Amino acid sequence: PAVEYGLDAPFDVEYHDAIPSTNARARDLAGEGTTDVVVLADEQTGGRGRLDREWHSPSGGIWLSVLFRPDVPMAGTPVFTLAAAVAATRAAREAGVEAVIKWPNDVLVEVDGEERKLVGILTEMEGEADRVSWVVVGIGVNANVDPDDIPAETAPTSLSAVRGEPVDRRRFTQRLLEAFDTVGSDPDAVLDSWRDYSTTLGRAVRIDTSQGTVTGEAVDIEYPGSLVVDTGEERVTVAAGDCDHLR
Ligand code: BTN
Image 1 (cartoon, rainbow, N blue to C red):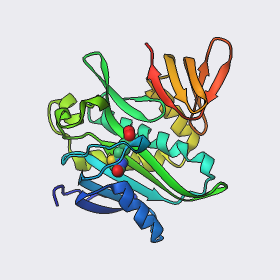
Image 2 (image 1 turned 180 degrees about the horizontal axis):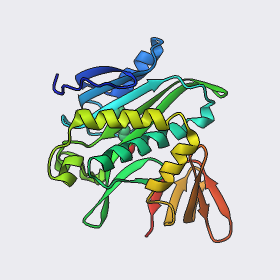
Image 3 (image 1 turned 120 degrees about the vertical axis):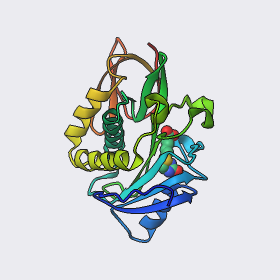
Image 4 (image 1 turned 90 degrees about the vertical axis):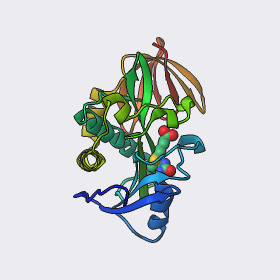
């Protein structure tokens, strides 16, 4: 294998040098009845992002998907996405990179005064409204990759670009999975850590939602992951949308 992970992770790990998409593989495993597994790849040839965008996944990154079967209703799943962002941010900070979270789950680093994307998260699930059957949390970390090899429109950066030297992918992934495992079982702890790491709270934001645009100050996050925005006239709770920081 390209990476000697040898992870001592709280999940079984299935490693691939190259695979179309770890999320697609994890969904297939879910269909076979598997659970508590991490699919990990050095390179993805068909990585997917949110809104069905391509997710460029060259060799050197950390592309992984966690498959598990939590006992929660469908509406409770956003907290797992927040937990992944918290875990990735914690692991990045331990690697010396001052990552922050933009609502809901983009992990960014400020480079030359600009926010650049370090980690993307894509959660997929299936099941009934009152109980999910499975959840796949896909986490893409631009670890040891050259940001110039990633399309510029995603405003990418990477751990190696920020640090000036490569990161130990085995150690980073180990810490990421441990943090996800601990934080993932305690929604209140997830929200508290999210608040600590957030760059969105306290800022002016514009959020495009399916019901229209909300503009105001982001004042808090609420279970299971909604942003509370003070528009000046009222407090609006936004469950999902595309968020821009205005200042
Ligand atoms: C985003 O658009 O920000 C989400 C990107 C998610 C990428 C990860 S990489 C591992 C997993 N497999 C995929 O195909 N996508 C996710």
